[in-house]
Image (cartoon, rainbow, N blue to C red):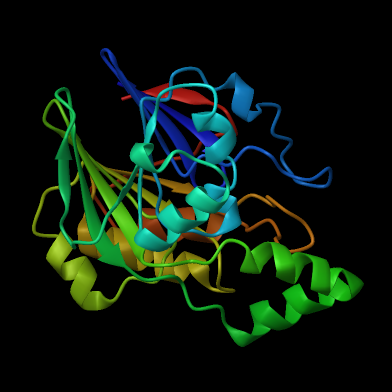
Length: 258
């Protein structure tokens, strides 16, 4: 099985004859770091596309990707409505309206769980507003064009290997405890949305007890809305507090074999 980090919360996974995408977002602005050299037309035969929520940095490249292949999209009802407005064929978009929804694609299964968006804290909001400055109205319109909707976390079961992806880190303790009932091989956890996000993300690792964890969404994906997140505090906390969990780091567009 191969896992490629596309930057932000995006991943491409290949297993045997199967390939699918999670939150693919490639089209950034000129100031984003690290630079993403890939564009939607570089994605070939995506298979299925799974979306955690409807914000632009998770959804906005899906119309361009689906225009070039026959992939189907699995997302919330709100995200489905956004894609319809953007011209995506509604027959290729599957709205998830049930917590625990499961789809079997022959070589793997995907299961969606209702989740929550991370709550932006006051210091982060204040810093972001200062960075945005006079760009506020334009960026607000862009944000309003991609409403969040129901947040979904996605679990993938492939050849006895279980991967769980969170596109944002607002899960309640009850949600994490429920998800912890299933052994987890790989956790994909985001580091974005809170000034102490490494503490939030470390709690995911502590409760879910994965064999391996990979952090994502720490990149400066769309300045001035975003900023880079220092991953080191998270790495240190996991290694000290979550014995038995291997921590892996990835560069943008890097592919690893699991």
